[in-house]
Image (cartoon, rainbow, N blue to C red; front, side):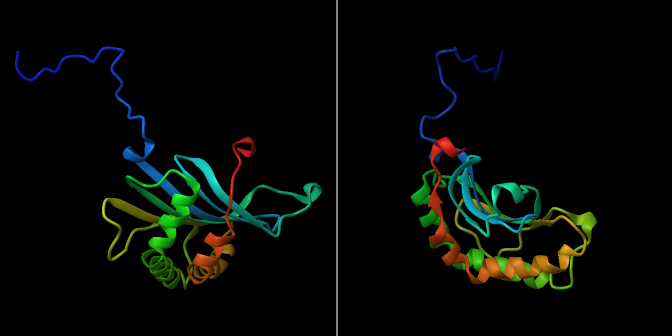
Length: 174
């Protein structure tokens, strides 16, 4: 009976207590809504950590449907899981991320076929060790694709400013 491993007992945990050691995800996003609001934020493990809202519509005019979004999706071991560490991580790696966003914007300059959504871009010449970064973007309507390049370029141009605007999300607001 070669090569069989014994089953673990129910008392043996297969998960680690420190989430930062797990293969994790960290997402920095900008989302434009139909009502004109723009949300920017950082999520770790699909949990909101930081966010800001621009051009928020009054409650009676609010429409949460997205018209476009841009995600900076990061996967790897040891990514931060706290709000301030996540902001610092994105600030530390902003040169790589900004150049990627600028290159994506250049690639999208002509437009994007709506059948290609969401569009995933991974052409970074270098990435932080142990982390895979993917830029993902989408626009709701075909004509909005022409404006997507403007949003991507603004994300690259104002990257640090957007990070500084983010406020911590209180758990009762999830």
